[in-house]
Image 1 (tube, rainbow, N blue to C red):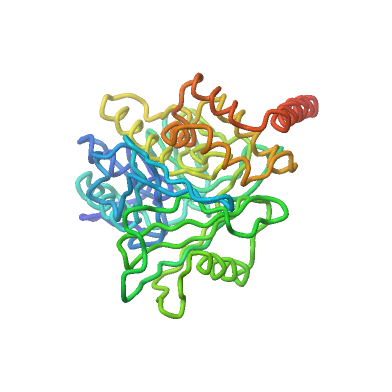
Image 2 (cartoon, rainbow, N blue to C red):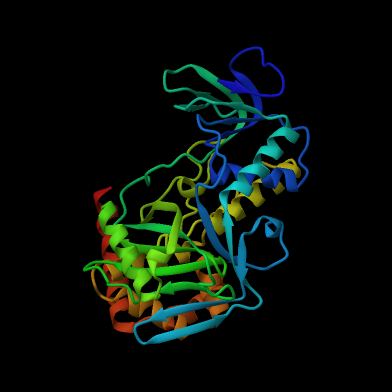
Length: 400
């Protein structure tokens, strides 16, 4: 049930910090603890699965030259946004768009575990009991596994209450290998809206080339309904056709699937005094896009900095309150059909500098920049969505 370089005498394990869930969010925290040279901390990781290898891909934008650079599979200073009206090439300077696969992140987390002499408990976590001084992590049968000063919980959770609008970002990607030069290594396709659009929602494809013979080609939808396997494969074949790819001459080396919530329902990032939630459960997923990685990275860095300084490991909110309000309005407008998804994103990229758009999607723009983003959206439909959102909030308060 437990793993460590030396035998541990008994349960519950005593720790200063327990990570419940060992996926991307916890791995980034462990890597950040290593990066900030945190010492003297008793750490426990509770997860029945020890994550290894390539099980997911993260794409994100940021400034080059950070700690992630040695782990990147590829990065691009230019990306394409494609609509039926044409192709727009975005120069991202000073930012870059980057692709990070999971294996090097898990490897770095494992190295950090060894340096910290962390205890890994290969069991599922159940209830967390927080008495205000210590947190007891129990398994589903009620047995005590860990007693910790702080718990960082990254297990998936539903919002505290259902959102007024609840969509999903759902996708399937094929890692395609070719025997001859096929892909443009110099540019990624960020969003390609030439895909057939669903009745309710928005779809797009994208291409992340590692080199001219190997790339991730993916189909994504934002909307309320998932597809079946045949639906995703048909959508991918159709998108490959739009790209001019001959699938009979390519090999599918790997398949990636995912479903990420897009909702204005609130998440409890601090459910009790000494429990902090990270990742999607801690509000790291941007409601209007489903993007999560950049906020997880910020959370991990803030946690590590706090622990290195002897402070409580409590990160700042993943996004400003005004951004969550803007996301709720945008989701409502898209869901009710006040504005089309392709039109919404086309205007966003057409009427703002690329850096502003990407920084906005990451949740790090200033109020002045946010106003510029708002002015780029269709005025009358978005005004209707603002009024509808206000009425929905009032009805929810009256019901409560």
